[in-house]
Image (cartoon, helix red, strand yellow):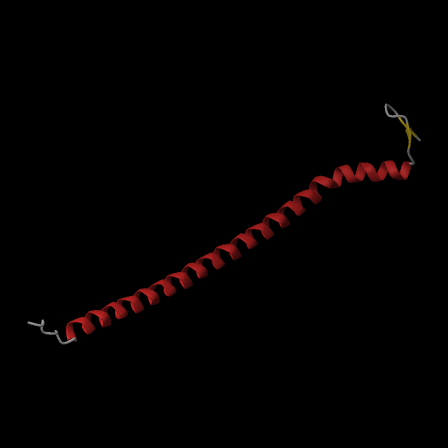
Length: 90
């Protein structure tokens, strides 16, 4: 069978398959788009959860370092106050 306008010989089966493909493609693409959207959303959720956990970890680490720095400063201050004063040489 010769297709008009483009002048290509095509079998009836190939033509029927093309027509069915054109009819089915929107439904298949719709399902594929839904699956990709769901997968993308799931990936985004995982990324958000990982980000939040990372923020918690960083916050906890920051608090621990601040506590250690405060303790160290306190120990330095106590050490300076507790050190006996030397008398000036006359």
